[in-house]
Amino acid sequence: MAAPIITLPSSSSSTTTLLASSHSIHFTKFKPIPSLGFSISRTNLKNPLLFCSKRLTHAVAKANLGLTYPAQIDSHKISFTAKDTDLLEWKGDILAIGVTEKDIIKDENSKFENNVLKNLDSQLNGLLSEVSTEEDFSGKVGQSTVVRISGLGAKRVGLVGLGNGPTGSSSSGYRSLGESVASLAKASRANSVAVALASSQDLSPELNLTTTSAIATGIFLGTYEDNRFKTESKKPSLESVDFLGLGAGPEFEKKLKYSQEVCSGVILGKELVNAPANVLTPEVLAEEAVKIASTYSDVFTATVLDAEQCKELKMGSFLAVAAASANPPKFIHLHYKPPTGSVKSKLALVGKGLTFDCGGYNIKTGAGSLIELMKFDMGGSAAVLGAAKALGQIKPPGVEVHFIVAACENMISGTGMRPGDILTASNGKTIEVNNTDAEGRLTLADALIYACNQGVDKIVDLATLTGACIVALGPSIAGVFTPNDDLAKEVVAASEAAGEKLWRLPMEESYWESMKSGVADMVNTGGRYGGSITAALFLKQFVNENVEWLHIDMAGPVWNDKKKAATGFGVPTLVEWVVANSSS
Image (tube, rainbow, N blue to C red; front, side, top):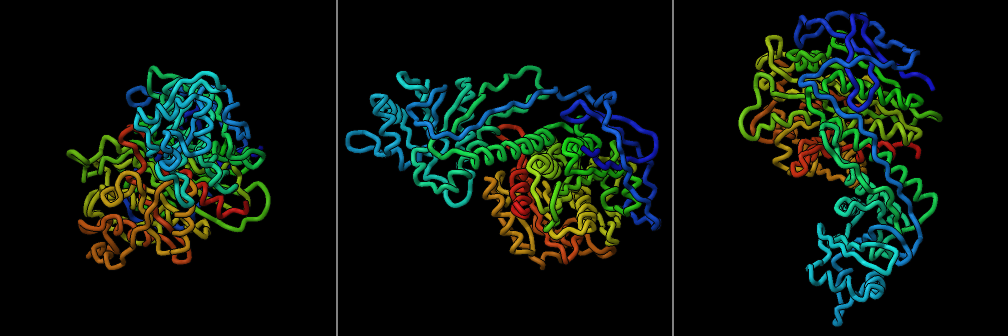
């Protein structure tokens, strides 16, 4: 296979390790930036691409702050199979049945009315109905009960609540069912599990396929734990999952394979966000992108620009954010082209890539500032790279995709940007910085301009952009902003198929008044209210009018407070959207 195209600067080199791999690639240090945030007059831009014909080589790792390195843990594999086996004949550790509140209704003799549960219960001499009554199991979402049995092929039978049942095209309810099944398997250290639905006869053949996929996704991700930074951890016990009564055949095998490929991207996204800032620097994030291009070199090329090359492209807005950090910025561009056939659609996925954000001179302080969690401020880039990994395996035809990340840290030093500074973005627009903690939009400005310059038809950007969006929508729903109704419908439909929650918010043009500057084209933050809206309006200034654009503010769902870990949010939605725009 052809080696990926990688951009490497030409000065003295240093090395660093990949986040989850033993491979390394050489990058270079950069010179101090003499003109913070301002345009460079140089116009004769040299070709930034360097063609490398040799494969990536191993390199000695440099020491990280704290001497922390992620453990090399082999990815856990689970075999998923769709079968027509009867529930009573299946042999294994746990037979898990998804039940709605309607399924659990009993007649005057305390017997299940649902035929699947009635037949199973009769073979167990009424044990299921008895236990469900004793434990007050009513089929509500989040409820589950497991009983050990004898006389059947299964060692245990579990009932898992689906509430009123998933509705519409959303797969989130069935994905939650899969997560509950994973929890049951963990608790009992089960090796084999079968999953069935008490009312599978109510599903169409197409819904059977998507339901199976959603449950498999929930099980796979529910089984996964990120233990790379723990000294002790248990290896997951679950090895095989059978789906009973939902269908079988090549279509199910293909769909289950697709689900696992998407899950591999979600896991990469989780690991990138979970990794602390002393491990995941902009340089290491760039290496992860290069690793994707190397692994799937039949469809990917990688370009990584350093600060000097970004100066040549006049990225004053991005470079100003990066200026205070000892860790140099990296501008990442992965380019996907299908292995065969013509291209009918050109897309760009742009992810915010702040590997740490202290706020700059407007430093994050006090309770609720979340400074200790600001490693997740690169959640948008994690979603973009996770989607790239999944799509490298899926290889959708007929679509070209550009994955773009402006990676850096927002820190404090004598070289950093200050409140009141005026920056010049690569499209020539000037920005007065009235808050250094509104830095993500400054990096996205140059990234969006770069994306438009690739000749794309549509752009979706993702960013942990505003706390205001968390206040508005809570921790599990991302906000969507776009002036284009058709694009909004596309992406929301993709999110429903992926089991992720998006909610479209208005782009109120009158709010732009608060973003006007007396000395520049705009300021980078508006008034106290409508912060998510004004942030989206800011980004709009850097998108060409002929390009369809949508912004996702994922500040809430990037992180699960209960689990104290990343969610991998955005990856499934992006994959579904790209595939929907392909010739598949």
